[in-house]
Image 1: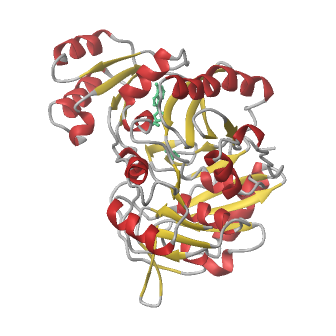
Image 2: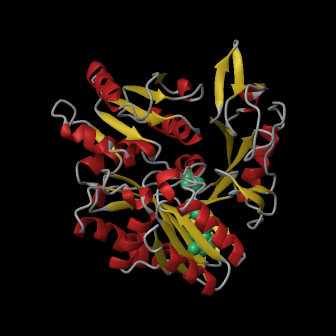
Length: 427
Ligand code: AMP
Ligand code: GLY
């Protein structure tokens, strides 16, 4: 079949790489893609939110499956756009409807969904301009730290963990009164701070049945030892050793199953990936967030460990056959180390010439391109996160070590990365 994938990051390069290996894939197009996805298919210069142009392209190329990488088009209703047009409605869309994508698109929606369905999450309140003074009083009397979240999409920047009441009040004012994240922060969720280790779980669902993909842990802070500001993700590992059978049983019973049955009960049309951002609090799983798509950089370790044909799983999803699907997982560990531009996540300069990407690539190491563009007969940096270098290993430490050996061959001015990805799991 002919497949169109939406997106442009390392996640989408990993998806394109995996889709291309499928026996079901005749032709793969990526809109807009990057020079890495161009190894796996044909890049098309259409933006992920330009639904009319995407629809016209699907008709022109006889596309039968649309796979959506990022959250933006999902929250903007790409699923609904395709299903509402009779000439496009037979195309399989991998991604939830706009209403169901609110699990990511609105923190308040997600919290209320969890409350209704008895899913463990931090206690919370929500505030807007209308009950602003109540919010101020709440923050003044609450224990610290306390977490403030802009309700809407804020490109991963909408969460503040305030260590002092003053910081909490300043952020609260900034979000609600000064619209720091535009309309996304008109509503703010204030929640209890949870202490524990985080991990990411992924399900593919048709809104009734589901399969689980390998779990992963990502490393969000810029600095080694998890220090400094948050980033889009500096690396990831899979499997996650503390996610043992006993913990995973709790995740299944208390989080995954009630989430999927909640979708069905509430008529939320969901055919796609559910990303469970979890935190392990003393052996008990709590949901920190839902995302309506795969994670980045988690995808760069999850898909390399998936031995099953991904497109076949998408077809099972479309045909309501996920209850019979078999997910085969590579027993090896995988780790990815993200190369970033100097200065990121603060200001950084783009357009730095990159060398060594092809020599660094080898049998055990894949390089997934992110902020890279083709210019002047070569490759240049075009974003904060530039590439994700993924390796397999007998252990997480082995996999990370192989990625670091490969990275030694890659160069661009200002290149930075964390050498300590997976540091808690040394054996
Ligand atoms: P989010 O954008 O919801 O993923 O939040 C970003 C990060 O903030 C998470 O990955 C956590 O590290 C942290 N975080 C969010 N909510 C909480 C919470 N209730 N308790 C502790 N940490 C949190
Ligand atoms: N790695 C976290 C995310 O994709 O949101």
